[in-house]
Image (tube, rainbow, N blue to C red; front, side):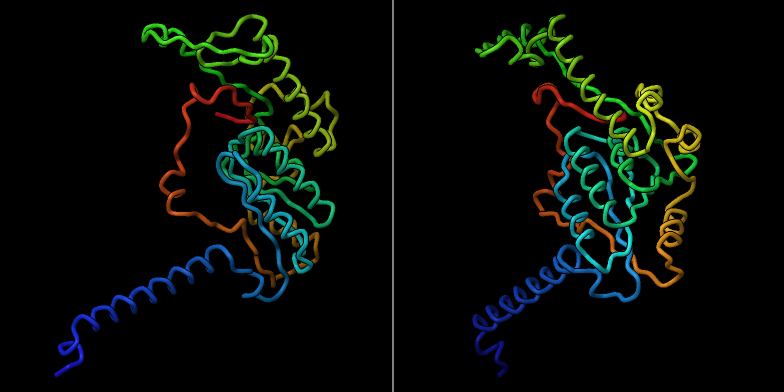
Length: 293
């Protein structure tokens, strides 16, 4: 009589245990491959780092950690900053700009603009040594906007009234349950103007242009890559291959090189399910953005 027939319960437990070991091992392998591996371990030859800035810029930690990692890696000769982004929140865009600026002090950085690199996406690119865009890339859109939604009339129809106690007249400004007063509009306009001035100053610094020249282009308008090139906001026209060729030429690399790309993708199951969830505007208050929509 076979062992499985003689001890069916024990045999079942053994099968379950074996399956758990296999599943755990497979999960560990996938996690290592997708998130924790050091790509430079698997390849030889010259190494070029790639920093992907994709989608809405709502945070900077993952991207900046990767930038710092490339900056510290002595085997990384230069870096491609590959951008496909409409921009995003002001502070993270500025933090990534600062990280790229620090990186450019240590290594050659070429920004390659994909289908879109507008507003905060273009802001980030300005810290690179060279900017390359496709002729049809949508870029620039230098400007700031503050989004606020009022649901006061709806709340009144539902018989709901907000009661807020504040320490100052502007503390509750921008509440979705109240309409902006003329004084509050002036207050928010001053904030937007100040953030806009910061944007213009950093573009002017990064592009080695006068603030006056940048200001004339900084009315929120989007430009094609071709128009941006003519305006001096882009250095070269071409795709990722062109950006790589320029970088390799500057570094004296002829053929043998490996791309070390990041930041690593690491996502929990819960985040995968909820990743596209966005808090409605009416409950999140003012949002300051370098964003093209």
